[in-house]
Amino acid sequence: QQQLVESGGGLVQPGGSLRLSCVASGVTSAYYAIGWFRQAPGKEREGVSCISSSGGITNYADSVKGRFTISRDNAKNTVYLRMSSLKPEDTAVYYCAARPFAYCSGYRLYEYDYWGQGTQVTVSS
Image (cartoon, helix red, strand yellow):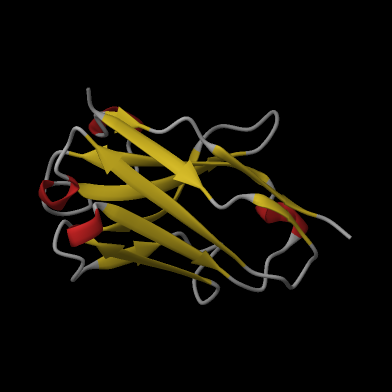
């Protein structure tokens, strides 16, 4: 059974940092580009960052550039999202998803085959 599981969310103060993890099981994540998405209450799900299957190419939404860093360890079937300088507007449920291509190409939700259940990130003082 193909599955993605996110972890690492929590409550953090503005300016703080968190690292999210996305572990794949039943699917060899090395064959997939992996994206991180987020959804705040009352808002549509939006793409945050994506990394190619090899890890050599990354991209970021403008809202997180310079603050978030995506990386992957294919030996561990794991993708990470390091989030720094967090802002209250970063508060959302964060999801990882697998795209069955080597490269990222935007954040069209229908292009991602497998999704995790999400992890809550709350930025508040």
